[in-house]
Structure formats: structure tokens, C-alpha cells
Length: 515
Image 1 (cartoon, one colour):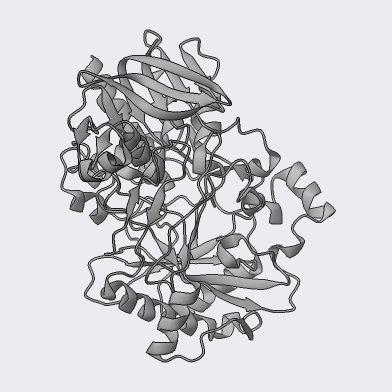
Image 2 (cartoon, helix red, strand yellow):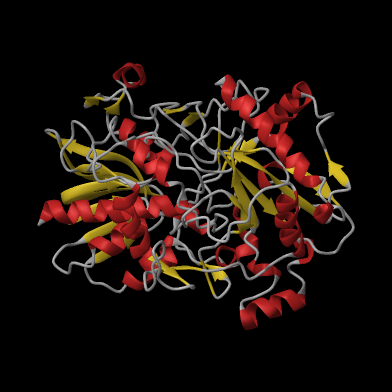
């Protein structure tokens, strides 16, 4: 029996476990389906793609995507302490202030969340109006500085875009280097930043390799969870609350297997309905990336990052190619001048990033493209069977809304314009699988054929639909959700930092209720 049981030791769960266990008078159990984060590839930034489809990845795919030529899209999710923060590209982006204000939920405005972003942060530039210092999570400048990355920023400026030295500052528009969740050139995950320093507390228990199958609900109260470690069924009880932090795919799936979800879908599967909550698993959103790849003969890409001299540089000084996070640089832009904020994020990596990162680089290359960050299209997460070990049925419906596709054409055309600038001439002379032409029809065909996820799912347990503004699941006492699934709309940017802020907010809400 514990006071708090947290399911999922990812970006949010590690933060919650650390913050709640700061009170020595409460007991906390954090449960993770995967193992401890001991793999060396986790901590070497450039090795992130080596983690894909390993035992540290849930290795999800979407169902056939009707508007992407019925392709299935690879959807990696971390299955390890730190969750996806242990396998991501470490970009520290909060999104735009308009994102949070548009949620229109009490306590969730940008001004109210900014102190929580700053509380987590230990920015190497120190404290300022927009940044924090001394928090658990180190935020650092890029230490790789690949020449292709610098050239991409210069080309964007040549194409008429502004420079931006801080995407989390006063303005989001513009191009530059991303800040990263790294310390001394090594990955900083929510596990290494928040959980590891708290592991010695006697009131914190961390259970790994334990997959939770359902929440136990008795007379309207969440009383614990039941799951399996290998063939052993394990029940863990919660005296005060169960908090789901499994992410936008796993949290709604777990709610539904617990009988909380759309009755019309659960009943035919034989899942007993506890609360008919139709919005569970709906409102799924994600950011897509439309990749542009250019091969060349310049020996500057990540192809040779693991050379002995680079390994020695990484081990001795925490610098060099192995500190490369993939997309070192990028920028935010608008497909129309009348938009109130950016709707495109460009991401540029000095490597051949092909087939959602599952392809093997065969030569030196530059990969970049637009990520569409304000999607109108909505998908869903539903159950595929009554067996809780079955992977969820995920349909993103990318480009179901025609306006999303029209915006993507504009964004792709802008990306191609950047490729033609003088600063990139030495790297972009040989397009790899390019669009047939610059016509709208050929760009649409290219988008449908090559678009992939950029791994930012959100929205499936949204505030105002599935949970209230204090993240409590409607119709069940003692049950909350705290992860990216609670976002009513996905933020304009990478979702790791916002998910950590959501967990900081959840910890405050839980402590306030307990006081």
C-alpha cells in the first residue's frame, strides 16, 4: 500500500515521483513497464536512433493512414525509465504562449505555467525573465555545431527569415540553434534529472519491468493497479491516488481497459463499463515531418560520428559529433502572414534521416523539413481486443482536414527555397528522392508518400473532456492523468518540456489537495 501510485516513468512520471516524494510523510510507488535506463546508447545523444525498435521502445505503428497512401506510420515511444525523454532528440522547446492561453482552462495560462517551466530548468545562461537556474533539468547550448547546421541557419536567413537566439524567449519566429536537455554533452532525461537524485529516498519505490493492465476501481474510487511482471500478476494499492503518466497512447488505453471510456466501444469487447466517458482516446493530435534529404560528398555528416577519435573527444570533454542530438538547428515560420503565431517548425539534422529514422544512412547527407505544428486533423486511440497486452489501435488521420495539406504544401515549398540558397549550395546539389516538380500536385504526392511522425502525440485525455482542470478523471475519485494526453491542443513545438511542466503542475495540484 502506498499513498500515491504513478503509472509510467516517462517525462511526466519521473517528475511526479520526485516532487511528491519530497514530502517524507507520504509514500510513492512509480511503475515502469520497461527496464532501468542503463543502456549506454541512451546517454550518448547521437545514438538515439539506435534505440528505435529495441526492447526500450514500445514500437507502435499507426493503423493504415487513409490520407498518406494507406501507409502505416512508425510511432516510437520510450519503454524505459525516462520514457520518451530517454530516446528523443533532446530539443528544449516550450511552445508558444498562445497555445496555453487558448486552452482557456483555469490555472493553465502561459503566465501561470512560466514559473513551473523555470522551476524545472537549469539553463546554462543563468536565470532571466524567461529562464530558470538551479532546477533539476540542465538546458544547454549545442556542443556539436556541425557545419551543415550552421549553413542551414545561414540559408534560412538568406531566404529572408529572421534569426532567433532563444525560441523560448519573447518571440518564437526565426531560425537558429536549439537549446537541448543535455549536461556536459550527455543526454538529460526526466529520469537522470529528476528520478535518479530521488532514488535513495526511503519513501520512494520504483518498480521496473512491470506492465500495468488496469486500474482497480471500487465503488467509484481508484484503489490501485494490477499488472504483470513476466507471468506473475502483481497488485499495488493506492491509499490516496492513482496517477496515469503513460502518454497519449498508453494512458487512454489503460483507462479503457479499466472500464473508463466510450461504452459503445468497450461493451462489444466485453470490457465492463465503469464510467461511460466518450472522449477517452479521442482528440489525438501529432506533428508530422515532411523530410527533404540531400546527399553530398562532404565528410561532415554524422556517418562517421563513432570514429575512435570522436569517441575519445566525447568521453574526455563531452564535445564533438557524438553530442549531436540529430536536429541541431531549425526555426519557426508562418505559412500565411495573417497567422497569430508560427504554424511550422523546421528541423535540420546533419545525417541521412530516412524512413522515420529506421533506414540505414548510406552516405553523407543533410536532412531537414517542415514539421506542421498546428494540425486541425484529429485521430483516435482505441482498443484492438480485450487482451491488455495488445497494442492499441492508433489512427492519426494525418491530413484528414484539407487545410492541413494546403499548409503543408506552402511549408514544403518554403523548405525547397531554403535549399537553393548559396549557404547550402555545397550540400544540396543532389536531392535524394525529391518531389517530381514544384507543382502543387507533385508536392501533394510527395507529402502523402514520405510524411512521417515527428513523435509528439497529445490530446487523448484532454482537459475539459476526460479530465478537469485539476487533471482528475471525470466520474472516478482518486484518479488523475498527468502527461501530454491532457493537452486540449498540441503545443507549437516539441512536447517534452511542456509535459514536464504538466507534471510540475500536477504535483502542485496533488499537494494542494492533500494539505
